[in-house]
Figure 1: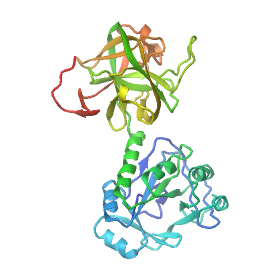
Figure 2: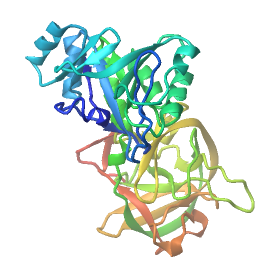
Figure 3: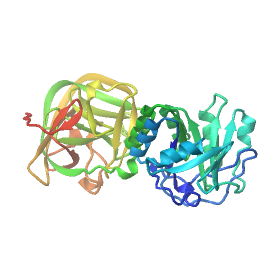
Figure 4: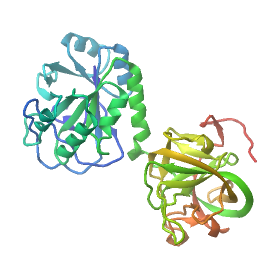
Length: 401
């Protein structure tokens, strides 16, 4: 039964080789508690990137193998014999469950399990002082989201690790995102390796602290009004800030994606819509998680895209609505400042549609409306390979015009 150890186990699991995952929102460490009247450490934690702990609790060797292959090396066992057997086949750090307590190989108590099936039992979990360093909460009352949010709120600013038992990857995501910051981690109690794969994919898509995209400067070489076309407005379930937008490129010149700004800026004639990007025509590509692209026309409610700022920092966002309408278009071409490549994009010819300049370029402007864009202006682009198959970059001979 597998698990990833986290920073909260620094003393208790000093010998482990488990890995942690960093999610995008920095926060203070959560505290951990013991089983009945749970009391926790209340000393303030240092501000740092939040590392998430994943423990996988299973009797399936394939699940164990999948977890180890993904860097998760701390395992929970109900049987010491099974723990010894698995330790002989893989480099792992075993922990053992005895009732509502969890011990390491040296029989040191490293965590407790707290079963919560009522509001009263939830109220008993409070960060008053130190009895154990870590707590595993097993929500059994049917409710999960609100109790998890209450725990996140109660233990912010305290040391330790608070985890919740999850029976699938979707449930784990709920706990990891409670009140945006999430619990410190989860105990993934599963018998299907697909849940390991899905949870790892979740971390890969959101491991944004390590994922800063390289944006380069390009100089506008052509601006031309071209006529009518079907353009796509992408409305997100998230608000965007000045400097943020979507990476978009047309089917031709797909080797360069323009950073198209959101409609978050205030204007005299129309209210700002910080959730919207007027992204381009139906045939254009937009960047989505996993290093892929999607046609704008294929986006729909529930899909994910990546929102990027001027520095290349990115985050995922859920599409709430896609709106396609016929509007006048404008063609923009730009040349790579570091080479001979030329990129192009079609956008609606309107004052609310803008490209993003380099952070310190273009007189400090956050965005340049396409209606005032001129030859010589600098804009940000994301360079990529030229060929795509079903949204995946491939190496092949291709000519696009």
